Amino acid sequence: MIDTMSTPIDIAGRFEDWRLYEGVRTRRTFAFIIDYALVLLLVVIAVPVIALLGVVTFGIAWLLYAILTPFIALTYIAWTMGGQAQATLGMRAMGIKLVRYDGQPIDWMTAIVHAVLFWAANAILTPFIVLVALFTRHKRLLHDLALGTVVVRTERFDQGR
Image (cartoon, helix red, strand yellow):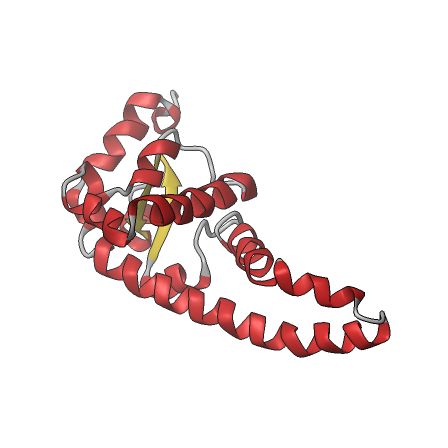
């Protein structure tokens, strides 16, 4: 018997179901808010720890404050989105996940590049970049287009397996 799920034609055809993208923009927005609230919580926890380390190290550990927020955010994204669920905790709460069009899993490096491209595009092109999702196929943003990824509804995507 031939495994038809592994052929590129079947993988590409799998993304044509409009139900995979129903409500994704709204869910993605709320997932972003949840995720960055969690990152903020982790930063708030780390600040006093670094303060104490700074006292012990005669101020050297206080240099960590310069990289604290990006380090925590990128570690969080690599650990969650680059993990088996392919979704951050906010994305899981909203029932969405990031997948690649070629069928490969999202690894930690792809997850980090996805986040960095999002923030770089935000810094250069302003937050209006999210309007791109109104005009692209499958409600993708610029960094999704660049990486060959798409955000889908988890339960509907997993049903098609």
